[in-house]
Image (cartoon, rainbow, N blue to C red; front, top):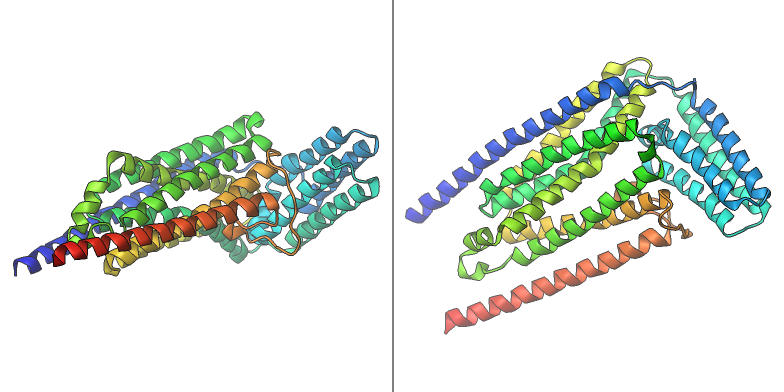
Length: 427
């Protein structure tokens, strides 16, 4: 009877903790929306002199042709710099890239971005003028196709709503999965009181995202390649933190369970350093998406003449969907046995870290920090961070192999410990 009451008491405490955490999540989401409204108001309405995306491509084509002329004249660096002007000052700055991602696909945007890189790579390699011209013409063709697709779509309430909804759900999904998994882990392991640090990390990340977006808009020196470098470095730091957290979770998935002290053992293992790492992982997950999401909405607002209200409705509905996803993670975690939950959570974070390393390297490629070596026969899968270049696929493959090795090693270690504990109990 006593054991039953203790079990029911623990279950009730967990439910209460979930309710409190749910309110905290809603508060964090509200803060995000408020911060976005405060920031987006004065800057999102920035207009350009272009009446259509084909007008933008007209100007980009002029820059691309100028790049070819410089290369043909023997100025390789000047030609590459001119290609960067087309990319940073038009494709990225005017929101072309983000609009393609919102209304066409992330894979298509990645394909175009890599064509910019391939054209510069052809120049660096000193290829013939005809080869460089062909690469630049292919870039112009892709840009013109996307512009015609976007210009051919009559603005509708439904289209604007879907574009807004896709942005917030796509950009926020990874962050909410990471935060939800970490918080569910703490609650599941009897460390609900330590979730406050995770929420603080999220709120700080939201504030930092707004600050970074403001800086990127005000200080033109941080736009272009520097913005890509900031995003790339942030992602790679997130990879390191998430990988460490994932490995730590695997190591605790079955530790001391055979002695019946799993809750106490895991609770005692959540030290200040571990909590900081978990909070830092949540911070990076939110920060990695925050500033980019704001910039996406800026582009959407600037390109929407009517039905602006549908942008806000899409944002609100997307926010609700993310909260529901978070709550599902939290409530369903109660019904999942401890070991499968811990192991599943760690594997999920491992997968996200593999996705992040591909996306992080891609950002550095766009910032001209890392080279681009194309791999034939492989397409982009933007949502998984998979891109057709040696520089992205090699570290992803290496991290995947390391992940499998670490999981196998941890599971074997836990098996040996269980066997040893069983022998001690039988003795």
